[in-house]
Length: 63
Image 1: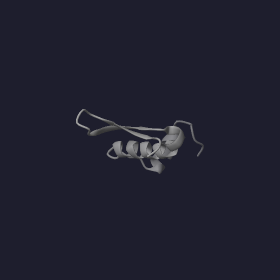
Image 2: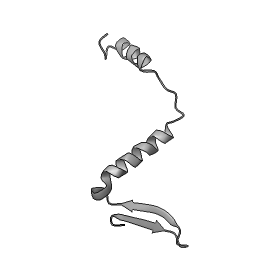
Image 3: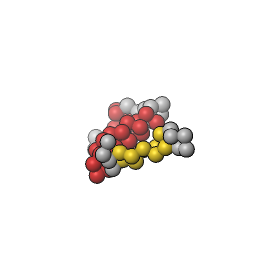
């Protein structure tokens, strides 16, 4: 596949990939966003209403 290169170890096993970002930049962004979301899936969450209240208290949002 043009724009995709695989790196292999001494046994021929694929260990990494090099992606031409000029050609596949938008695909990479989607992949990276998904990866970051997966890493953060177990982090505590805050409701939009609690966030809104906190921003109002800090003076960063008008009531």
